[in-house]
Image (cartoon, rainbow, N blue to C red; front, side, top):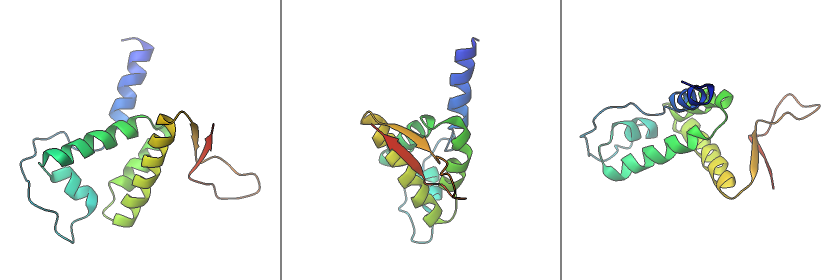
Length: 120
C-alpha cells in the first residue's frame, strides 16, 4: 500500500462510528434509550441512512479530533450526543458550502477554545 492509501484506510478506520453488524430490530426507540444506542441497534433502513451519513461526516473531521467527537457521539448521555452531533453537522455543512473550518482553534489569553472557526 502507498502512504496515501494507508492514510485513507486509517482515516476510515478512525471514523468508524457504529458497529458493523446485521441489524434486524425495527422497534421504536423507547423514551429511556440513549440516542446513540438506538441508532446503533436499529434495523430500520431510514436509520441505516442516518448512520451512513454520520459516518461520512465523521470521516471528514481531522483525525486528531475524531476520538473526542466519536466518544461524545457514542455517549449514553443524550446531551453529549446532541452537542457532538451539532458540531459534526455544522462542520459538514460548512465544508460542503465551501468554507474552511478549524476545530478547537486556540484563543490567545484564554484557557478555553470555541468548537470551531469558520473562514470563507
